[in-house]
Length: 379
Image (cartoon, rainbow, N blue to C red; front, side, top):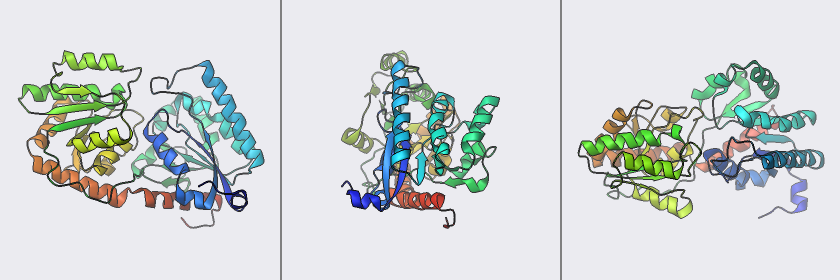
């Protein structure tokens, strides 16, 4: 329900500069849930300016004339909101580095010009590596001055520690709306492997194909589904060629992008989620929470904050980066032991339900917004 004008006049305004779908990725999904939160909207008048410039995963990171026009429109709209609404907070999912960071600097400059408290929400990492550039160090330090920052795990603090005092940093892991009903015992039989992520090579789909080829040679029975939007680094055609070149066409299907009930059905049909990512910007992948929330055992790499979620030997198995052999070993262990697979899946559902539920997440966000607006409040 949209609040009435009198209701909005009695609420503090929060200007949310966020990425929203499309394209679909973890940061966009989380941001969409934040600005739509009933808990937050009951307290604040949230004005959202979507700042994404790419229309698809393959379009991200590419210079286009229409992106410049979209950026100018977004900057103009932001200035209008700052003048008319006089927000008490700017909540900004600032890209932490690369082109997206530099393209976002006009928004930072505007917020500083109007002296509005800034709260950045980093959904990725890579700041430490980017800081090898002297220009980046200077500009990033300017952007962070006087601001607060949300990161997704204590494990990620080292990435920002060179620029931010510990009191500027707040920890808020991603969260998920999870069914209160536990996964049904006996549904999973341990033979359907799922990869669910955008088809970016560094997310590990080719590493997984190599592991599946090893499983086939070993005589292990399995079926695998890959679902995700193609990218410039891995198109649907090149991925299908990769499947065929490994002689896996009888075991592996590529479904393209899935969403909504189709994604829910796919998660329910699977037994194991494989996510062998070595993506440099990987921080706290929402897809891992989604798999665990569906009761799947997870095999993943210890990238970013993944070890916070996938507890090795408890809710899944962690394997080294870019190691098809170790990945195949972990998958084989689960495929040959359905009881272990189900036990890890159930434990994963318990972890997500108890520690990463969306209700407590939004209440914690409410507390953070209040604290940044008024530092006298306790955290």
